[in-house]
Length: 313
Image 1 (cartoon, helix red, strand yellow):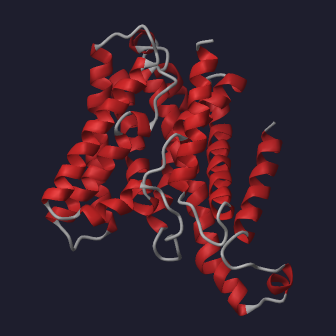
Image 2 (image 1 turned 180 degrees about the vertical axis):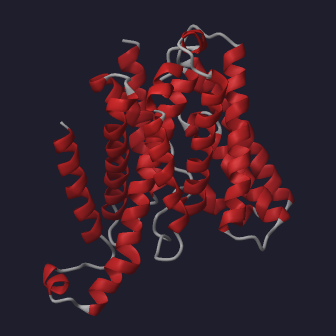
């Protein structure tokens, strides 16, 4: 089955390299045409790398949060993580407008980590019998953070700056403007190393403690990994919802919840979903482009509703 995912991933990567506003012919590539290879190396390859890393990172974030909260309907978009990252970026723009991307990412990281910690503490104190109510609380929480961000942006006259972080868009990814997203690679490696611990965390605090696991430290580590990934993603391409919700659920339905076994499939699935959404966005109104935030939100939203109906039929 992993071989099928790998073949699908390779085909989508090839399609992503060939689809765009400028048509590339095979003859141009084989003849080493300067303009064609410049398009590939300066635009298409960076965009492909950003797509793959973002899809992998968001899918891994989703599966980490689902084990921490013990709810299959949570991900950075339904726990306030994306909204908190946008708020952090706006605060950095107001306090340090001349700061570069690393400084803005640091603000986004702090706000995202704090928001995730608050969400986990709130959910732990309130016992819900219906699993659907947890993401509803998360969406309400994210809505409050988003409203506060809009008010802050309006008060500091940076509403136009805010629009760039509201919707995911890979059209601005070119060589030299996306490299910060490579931080996702060590995050995925750490997640794989701690896969067994996150699996145990998903069994509950009592079970994890009885098995000798330091439950609070593992939860904090998971939230920190999520915060780094979300902040790097929002800084580079903007907010992209539902990737971390749909893929972990589909993989869990087929392969179970053992992260050590399913994490590579989750990562490949996240990358494939974003590649599909990006290719659709580039083809729907060709040669113009639909932002991937719209296509991913539409596809992910439909799959999210389907998952809710499936689990409660």
